[in-house]
Length: 106
Image (cartoon, rainbow, N blue to C red; front, side, top):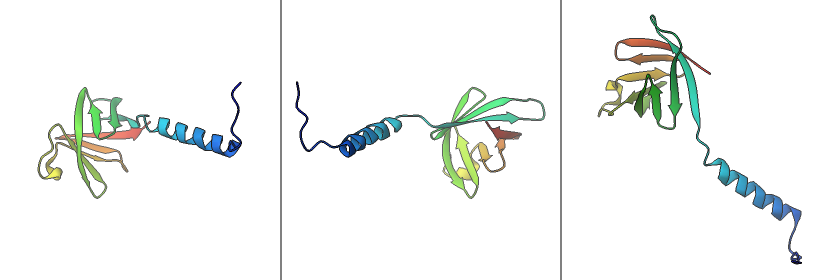
């Protein structure tokens, strides 16, 4: 049988378990799913995952934010406000070139 060292304490075990679980949680991917609607279409899925947006089968990179608006594009321009997609998370308004979508988080 293996002897338990006298310096062993339940607190130390609990601390080790907490650290292990905390490191494991870092590997989880965080994302937000949205349902968007346009004048002609309903239930257009959109996902914000890390620094990317997935919309209508395309992936767009996060270019930056100005105020409450976030900008996405397949290739970010030097001036982020010239990106093809502007998204305002607080209102759910997504403008993709000339198309406006109203989105709601799921």
